[in-house]
Length: 355
Image (cartoon, rainbow, N blue to C red; front, side, top):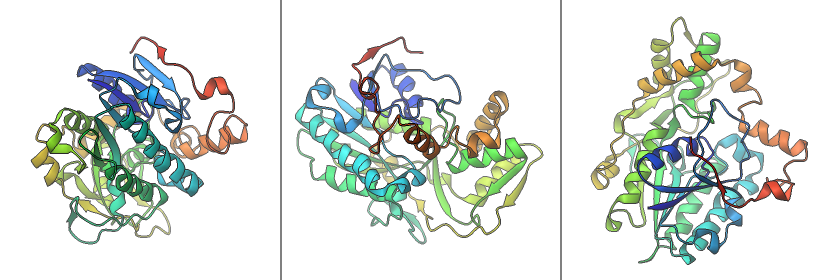
C-alpha cells in the first residue's frame, strides 16, 4: 500500500514512518519542516520526503496513492492561540483542500488524525464517539470542523476515517514537552519535582504514539465497510487518568522526586474520560502495547541518557510556539507560516536513505 504521511517529520510522524516502512508500506512524507531544528535525538527519514504545506499540494501530487495518513496541523493549544484564524486556515481549510485533491486523484482512504480534545468538558462518565462535541480551544474546534467537512465528502470511492487520539505521550526524535506525561516526567528528571500546573483533578485519556501508529495501520488495512466515514476513539479504557494519577506514577518511577503543585493552579476546563469500546469492537486488529507507567519508564531512561534541563523543555529549544515566533522575527517565515525563501518553501520529492 502506497501512503502519503503528512507531518512526517513531526512528533508522531517521525515515529510513525519507520514503523510503517517496517510493516511493508510504501511511504512518502510531506511536511513544511517548521520544526526541523527541534531535535531531541537523531531522526529517521522516509525514503522520500517533500517539503511543502499540505494546503499547496495538487491533484498531481496525490496521484498513485492508496491512502493519506494526515497528521500535519498546528498541534497544540498555545500554537492555536497564536493566531486562531491561522489555526482554522491551516488545520481546517488546508485539510479540506488536501482531501479534495486526494479524492480527485482517486485516493480511496483518508485517515485523519483527530483528537479526543473535541469532547472538551464532557462531565461525568466515559464519552463515546456519539457524544456531542464541546471543543474549548481553537485547536479542538478545528478538529471538529474537519470531521464535519470530510464526512460530507464521503462516497463510494472516498472513505474518510476519523481517529480521535487520546492525549499522546512517548519518546520521539522530535519530542514534545507540552504533553502531560512527557512534561511531568521531564520536571521530575531535571528538577526532582513533578510539577502540576493545575489542581490535578482533570481527567485525560492518554495513548503512546506507537499505539497511535498501530491504530492507523489497522484502519488502513481494515475492510472498507468497517471504517468508511467512521470515528474511533484511540486508546485504552484503563488509560484514563486524572493528572494527579499520572504524577503519582512519575513519582514512583523517578528516584528522589516529589510532587509539587504550582501556586494558583486551578481546575482545567478540559476534562474528559473516554470509552474505547468501539475501536475494540470494529478494529480488533488494533492491539495497543503501551501503558502509562511503561511510558514514564521509557522517557525517564531517555531523559537520563540524552540529558534534559528545564531550559530545554520550558525554553525556546523545544517549545513550538517559541520556535515559530523566532522564525517570524528573523524573517524566515511569513505571517502565513510559509518559508520566505521559495527554495525552502517547496522542493521536489527528495530521495534519501532511510535510517
